[in-house]
Image 1 (cartoon, rainbow, N blue to C red):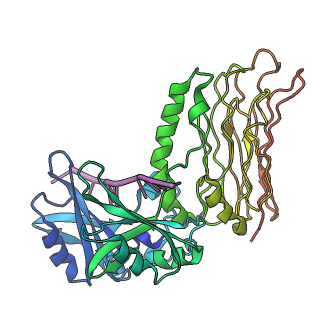
Image 2: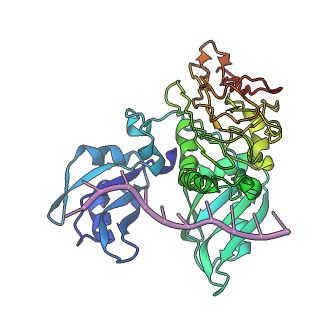
Image 3: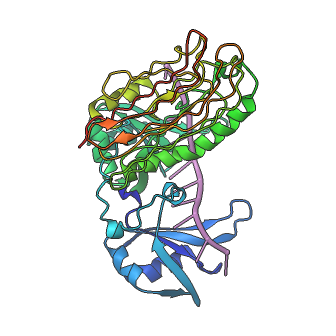
Length: 410
DNA sequence: GTTGAGCGTT
């Protein structure tokens, strides 16, 4: 989003180059708001790159046109990209100049804001008072180290309305009595449905779950900005275990594509933690999710999965974007699901994945591969996944249901 | 030596 707008990445800098030096140097182009030179946490040695944030984002354009030599080293100055952007190859190379239109307010509307860089002296009062200028503050939290009780330098502020949050986030930095703090949407700490507790009942591959989880974490920050960028947040699915794969749709111009996912692994039909609900939205808590209602957005495909055990339906839940619940179901088995389109144009959701090993007992056929959905481009249609798993003799067959629904073509 | 870092409570 705009968060990195006006932020310059400077690579290949000398180890001798200090922040002051960088600031001085780039200060010729415009007012430098902040400079960071990244260092190895352990050794403290500079890693050879840093970031320069300009007060006026447009300055960046001029900076990018020149080549730069600092402390005798030719350095490379580029527009900074957030981690998310980096990994998703989907970065649309053409958003020059910050002209990124899509960003906007992002689709996530969390009413909680993470505030970093708090001065140690800041009190809850001061914190609250400042933010009250933006709207009704419902909660204020400044974090302290549990042992030392020293301020950890960050906190959270919750608002009553999303609008207030949006207003606050219009600027990445805020000035609290002369100190600068940085604001970001708070990451939902509990954003992780799946895994949890019962996740392992079935045990068998819990560890896999962990990994998956781990990945997701990375991407959680991912999401944070992703929101920003593209419009459509990544969906992910949580799965209770197993593989969690997920796709998401980047948004650039109009095509989403669905990711897809996972694999299922041979899941013996048992065991599964039913817990995992599939859902598209990353923000998990109900509260947060509710905010989506207004937003239409995404279609998403729900889970395909393999066989339906008794569990199948259970997870469920998950409210859909517009309140209707999209099949929620999560089966499990494998989970993979794709995600879909949105926005109207073509996305297609997909779901890859193969159904996993057929559970012995019920599903005979065992998984076929699922194929995914696709979407059609008529405005309405995203179609989600349709996987279906096995057909079976069993009474219940898996059929997954995704569905897609991209509502809101526009 | 070229893309960071912080995320909690009721």
